[in-house]
Image (tube, rainbow, N blue to C red; front, side, top):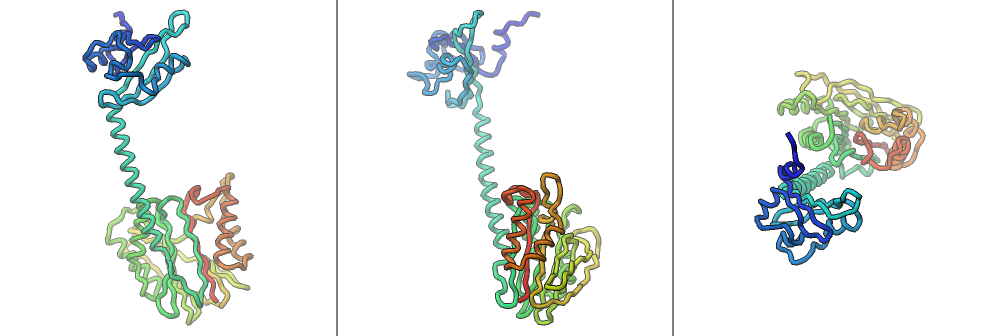
Length: 361
């Protein structure tokens, strides 16, 4: 079976036409002829579309001048076309005209505009969600008995870490740090859930976690969704820190001039993994001048180009050898961790970085 090139071109959905060196039409394929429905051979290229002169950005003229292929978008017959023009050469290599392929991309452009609109709406919603999440972070901090500073750097627009500091009564402050499985929108919704459900009036951290666990299981989340929470109460009257842990794997550190205590305590995350988790309270005495450091795993797990972690040892070295104001200590940790990993901003983080430093004064 012999196959002619004209049969192939006539079988194309795209419009195809050939122009001579003066941009006169010398050939059109079947698809274009049937769509235009007027005689086209011999007409100037622009006359096929009822134009009185050449297009402002004529790719065929550019192709004839530079002997290169050019492409543009053009509105023709109330449709959007991708127009590609390539030089046509004879047997000895001289350019004798151009071949244009016109593809109707109207539906594609409409879909593209729809996607752009949806993306704009999504980014607007994400921005609003970020503002809501940021508004939940602590804004009222103690001034007299405690100095508290915190850092919150989500690795995405919305983070899965959360920290809260709040006054329970005249001499007690509650404080917890949490890390939600995953990142992004779902994780941020969990932080909103956590902030709205956690009972800030209770004086037993273990009881708070038990109640939180119960509320979590009323909703019926999937087994791979969970929250780790380290919950504590600073009692300034009895100078104690009472705490309980729901699976948070970076233990807070209490340290002073002559002591350091890592508050390692097991506990199941807030999840649906068992019916009745066994949370218990622990207490440690505090002295004036002591500092308490809280963190998610984001800072210790920052890696350099050798895949080495920043780690607890480097973190503790900064904490124990920096007597500056809490906010300066946290800034120093961020700076050294970022320098260690060779990153310049939180946009390059693989995980959220959340920390707080409390000083008893």
